Length: 377
Image (cartoon, rainbow, N blue to C red; front, side, top):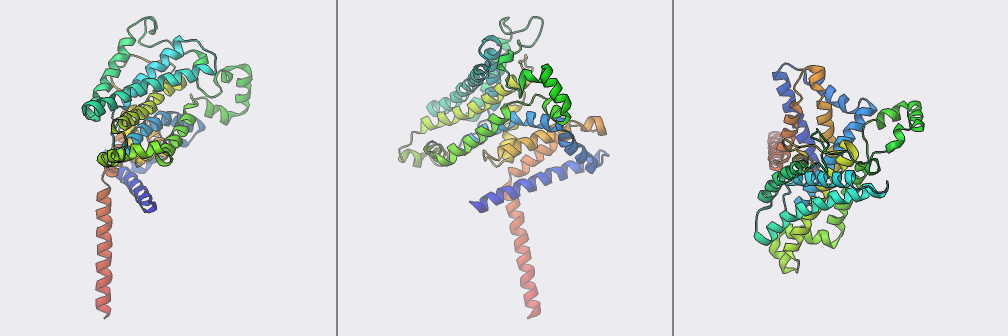
């Protein structure tokens, strides 16, 4: 197991380096200094407390959607429907957060649970279709992504949720916010305190929220379920070998539905966190936001390990947020970062390539040593 983990870590690090190398070659091709671009990306993510805070804000939904994909992967399923689960989670959270007045502490909890419940239903449907009718989860989840998108837009057509003369929903109530410090940041006492602590002010100015804590807790919970519980054992057993699991008395259909429901809950939570902690409303969508699809990349970078989704999500967010400054500082298309991430995922998806290269190098090294021994003899 330790050797396997080391191999995953080695492949991931090498894939990241290969992504940066290919990105550097492309930058050279368009006349941009790769080292200068790399400096902009790194400093753009960590140079100031505000930048670090924004990186963490953007990493939060990616960690959760990455967890969603990773959990399903560990049970033999491919949750490509995280985008739709994210959308319905956002929709449910904004309905509860904006239209259901509740006490401050209870309100965000209920809104978060509503978002997770919507994700459970959306993910559970995929599991139900596969378990009962044998429909491949990739097909049904992709279709449900579009259903979620148009369902959200349909709801936005009704005046009970849509602001007058706007394409946005009503903002969530202050009692539903999950931002750190919340209203205290804009109170007189809060402003006085933050003025006296500039670094803290810079760090807290972006919408840093409790979603990051929830994402870390969910990562630990997902790891614990998969590694330390009988439920996790059953779900993984079904993923490894359905026939053997059925022979062992495991209810395969139930396990498939439960696995996809848990995966859906995580993506639904990501949508709720963005509504309650960052955006404060939802808008009519012209296309998919790609949080669910980016979660696939995060999961792959983290080798489908729940705990590894935390640094993988932060890395993804740092690259995209820091890379967004390439255009303004170097007049370079920021899309180069998407190419780098794509190359990283491309190489991570080919672990056998690195193993073949490693075997070839070891073989060449062995042949060289053999030749040296014969010459000495």
